[in-house]
Amino acid sequence: MITSPIIWALITLSAFATSVLSGIVGMAGGMVLMFVLITLLPVSSAMVLHAATQLTANGSRAWMLREHMLWRLLPAYLLGSATAIAIATYLVLVPDPAWVLILIGLFAWGGQWIRHLRGLDITKPVTTVVCGFSVTFAQLIAGAAGPLLDVFYLNSGLGRQSIVANKALTQTIGHTLRMVYYGLLINVANDLVWWIFPLAIFAAITGTQTGVRILARWNDVGFQRISRQIILTIATLCIVRGGMLLYGELALP
Image (cartoon, rainbow, N blue to C red; front, side, top):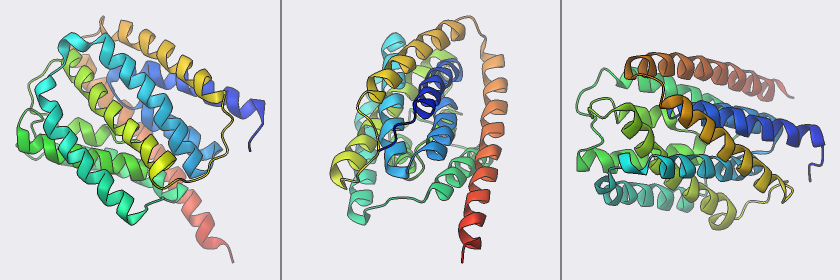
């Protein structure tokens, strides 16, 4: 079990800072937090703690913005999510740390390419099912799928607060399923101390409150432009770091 106070302090600070970021742009914070956790912890521990922290951050953000929620999207999204976790459980998927980082980055850059496609509108039932399946499956194998989720909102015509609110709800569902998957369904052991959960959760809630207050003062044009730049920068760093880890593994005798 990991007992270093420096590691737990870094994790707590990261939970706060990344929740501020997600509260502002509706995503990206999960990518950064996964980057930190997968660097400091084993995959199973990183997945469980990341899920708990992001569940809290997204759940509190969804509650704060609940008046902007489109509840009619929920049944179709849950259908897609249930299908994804059933397949992952059958295959007993536990990804390698290097591939977790690479996949996070590829999902983000892939999301930019998919932007050129038409018809990806989260408000359409079939698209909602596809969104639920693909985003949940991506969360199970990469931990963070915000950029992939983003592409399903490109043609929705929703405002920034509605986008952030509904993303928060669907992310909450995904992170809940990921905790169930890694903590119960495949029962992978982890090296976490119990008290890091309330500490990281408190940091996530505080960071979310800060981010939502900043979001209310922003405008839609700045929201779209800045969020895209942040996401792609983080994605590139994830790919580079994952590539370095993968190279190191392949270089071992």
